[in-house]
Amino acid sequence: MINQISSLFEKYYGFNNFKPVSLKPFADRIVIQLKRRRTTGFCPVCNCPRAKVERKITRFIRDFDFAGTKVFLEFQQFKIHCKCGFRGMELLDFVDLYGKCT
Picture 1 (cartoon, rainbow, N blue to C red):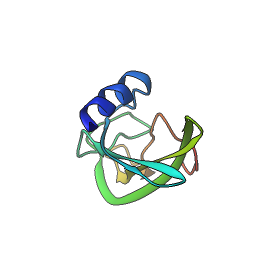
Picture 2: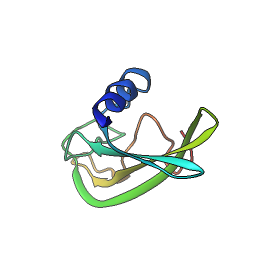
Picture 3: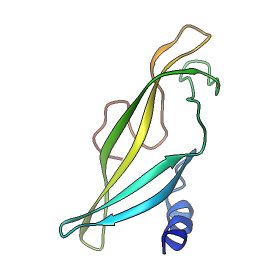
């Protein structure tokens, strides 16, 4: 079932560098766990994909409702240190830096 959900998720959402690995239904919400496709972060200054990861932070953010049920995404965001001198949180295309929802 997760493979079907994974392909639908990628088709409609298209989160770059992440793929859904599990779906946890609860009485009042659904939690979709995302796994990274890469082990490195992207620098928001120079867009270098080889930035050194200093820390991994688990994020839990709200996504759009699905059939009247709240949906949350759980994933890891990296704090990086790049060769260009940037040091901070990597930039993701589906959530603001300290955003609580997509």
